[in-house]
Length: 395
Image (cartoon, rainbow, N blue to C red; front, top):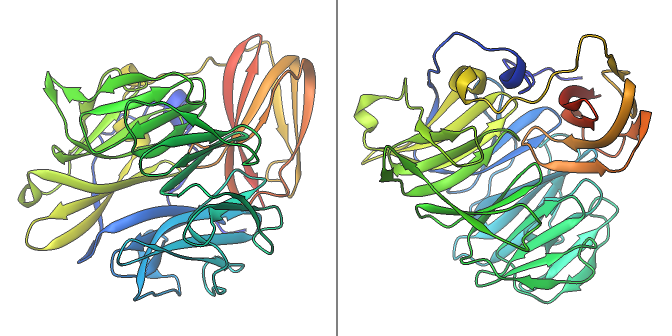
């Protein structure tokens, strides 16, 4: 199995406090912006404006794909398949390409961008209008709806569809759709069981009940509201890119924010961020450098989030035991505790929930991870003793 350089579990944020101050490091110059981040087979992929995908392994390297007709605007991973959704330069939907060798070779497209997976189904655009899903890793597709498609997000069995003017939800993997009523529409981000919407403004929408109700989060630092351009999360902490004030971090679900710009170059001020992405314990920020282009920077999340700002999960008491085995695993993983397990969620390295097992009420549970791509996953385990996180590696 491939090993990541410098990467480890973000559970360090909750249990290990590093004294080092967060420092951004230069990860590479590009005349074009970074549009999307994707993860597959323990690798981070970045798509650039003007066409092309790069694989990040401590530095940027060509991943074997280059497009001149449009940009890759979305990624999805399911099993050994990795998907890249393309949008034409005029903004119209283009194709979705698939790879079985971690981005070295790509097939011809079958559906359109955006593309996303909830761990069981793959969802994508169907022609220029509508959404389709696949249960066989993109080999065959079933049309679901003729709603126009601007963005997709998944939260367990819930699928969210942004048409550009309205938000729709399906609770049964896309078979039926119901319109929701958020105050505004924008880019969607999932953090654990939360759904957030950011629309390039000072306010972010937050839903704790799959879009039925919404609250607003005002992004400000010291009373000054920030112009938010992008959001990302590691499953525990929110990160926001801004237009003019760099990168912000919130460890209390967006209630309070602080800037984390140490190490970013003075010549880049005011700090405008075009996109941000999380890979394991690293945060990436694509900085807009006026009259020059774009510069990608990377920073350690554990060094960025201090102890006082961490929303820690409860540790298992010493008298209790919690085993996760085998680890690494090729498929089946068993969780065994000396107390009753209530609920287990499986998160990918981007913090998105890909599997949820509720109402366990037993001291042992076996999960089948064989349908997921190789790489690092995190188990959020709820019991009578609180919630803990465990890392598991799928070989």
